[in-house]
Image 1 (cartoon, rainbow, N blue to C red):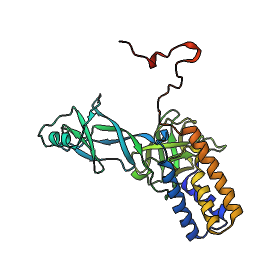
Image 2: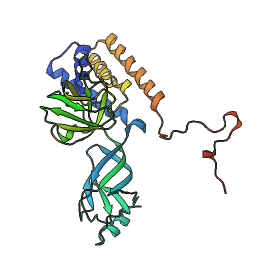
Image 3: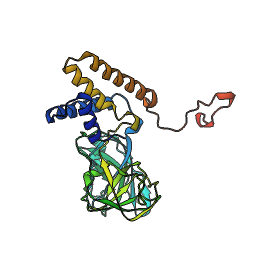
Image 4: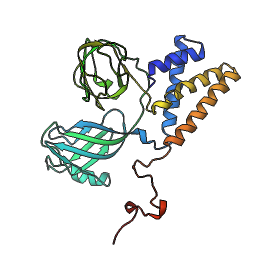
Length: 299
């Protein structure tokens, strides 16, 4: 994977210009291209799960910062998972919202002005609201974070503990990698998305850690800000920025070279991910004359 810091470094090398003004120009070009590319299709890799929590006697709570479109909602109250339905329109929500009914059994949800509303108003606080949603990009502008060392993480577990760090909530959604080396407390060198920040020294990963258990260690690590693109296409924003730089400098040979890289990469991205069907069924049901029962109905 290629973090913002690595992309910025590559841009300085590819343009042979590490002046601050040029690196800032490259930041702008990378972010503009990243945003434009992500709106060109309903990319399956933009669909994620985000969470927030209920507040007692309060309908609306803020959506997570990167939520663009909420597709479905579930609310976990104790050990029970409820799946409220979306309201049909604003008029329906207004009729419900202005009632005095409160309950911890959610029935409806509504998104408005960067917030999600739950009806009836929750009776208690702290119930987890899980959002199946489409996320939106934020500017790639935060340098890699490497302060402190990894002290513990268990194989097949999601909790990562770091000493000497000051982890913060905005690191949620970034990626962490424990350095791979020949030491006894080596990480596996893989990047893991961060699902939440528990404290200034503890974070949770989206997927369980696949490396060897570290206990009482002092291993180096990196937290990086990544593009929303699949890993194989992380170089595209930087290559586009390099193309724009050399076009601006009127160096046609170099500009064309980077433009070809970008065009080939975008074409490959559409070939691999340019569809919006998230199901795992890829057979049309007609191969070999056998009808797929999932594609039929019985009356």
